[in-house]
Figure 1 (cartoon, rainbow, N blue to C red):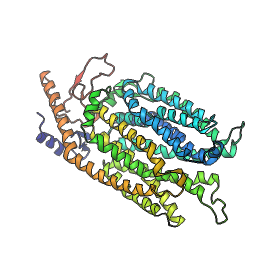
Figure 2 (figure 1 turned 90 degrees about the vertical axis):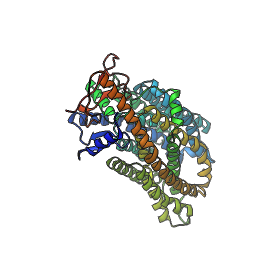
Figure 3 (figure 1 turned 30 degrees about the vertical axis):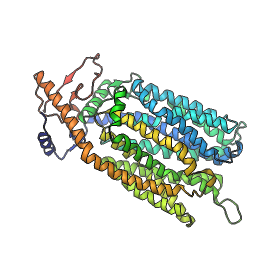
Figure 4 (figure 1 turned 135 degrees about the horizontal axis):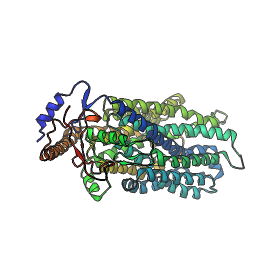
Length: 533
């Protein structure tokens, strides 16, 4: 039996070049081999590139509505009520309904087929918005856009959780997540350029051209996704010619090295396991609270548009209204990268979110007062962009806390995002009603309450991690190790240690570490127990 005492001895024996995974007790090297570094670079070059471009285009689509609204769409489609809010509502309804089924489907269909096909579908729908003649047509298209886009963010994050180690994950999710802000920047810049050069070109308004160009980019990237997405680590994509068989072996070894489970098909047993876990309730509540608390930054351009001189003329032109928020989005990108880097470097998740919660209270308090100088409002809106980096550490934390159940973390991830869209689809109309723009009487007060709730949830989840979840994960690891040792003993093998320190030395125990489908071995189960060199 691999006892807790022996595990503690393994911890005490870790060198300065090694670190210990607090969730599984695995002792891992802090230095990668040359082959592993090359493998990670390939992942970054193809998987991350596809994910980031997809997220940029996805967010281009979502923010195009805002850009188009202030660039002629409002007048062309006779939108003078809460129609702008309903665009978000219809999108959220479609997104929310299909999100969890999509997370289930991705475990049955190959990700390199599922994600690109959905991408191509939403590209076509985006192009159809350019042809709309009334607001009801846009409502219908936005609902179906939500359906097709539902798997983009959670599906990609699920892939990243499967391919990257805990020491790499937050930074990659951070880069991916920051592409939302990059998409916003490009949307405003693109709309400005289109308004200046293509407005009324071929008889179409500039805001319509924005959707046409977005649609072309989306379909092109979707076609590239069939090659750029590598599928799961233990299930190769034969079209991903940039990954060779030995790269998949490295990927499987990395999974075993950190004692992480591989991906399997979703079953009802996954639901039963998940609902019994406190994470099923705390992670979604934490995620929803942070995203709803951040929502005020989206209305920066509406406040800018409403600013008037004493004679009633606008302070900012339409182009200015599109360009100024680019600075806020650039600030958001930088902050996401910085927070994600420190999350991986210090291997802390909760503290990164806690810092943002306290910072987020500052603009929420100032703008809830509202009767302050315009300078204070500019300051508050720009500060609100600096706290858009909560999702990467939250989802990295989820991955850390569910090392032995890939389906469970994918399900909780989908449930968290679906819950947010389920709530935001109706709450935004009441919390941030378009008729109140730019002074939202309740919105910023609600943000204050939500940031306080975030602080409480973080403390609760951190205590739960230390007192319940971490001991539970270590116990599961211990049980798997005991089964592996027993199996090795029956075969006459005698492993000297189970805590691999690098890829070459990682255990490849399929049955015992949830690696149940062999890689390129004609479906024959192969068990390797490597003793220390």
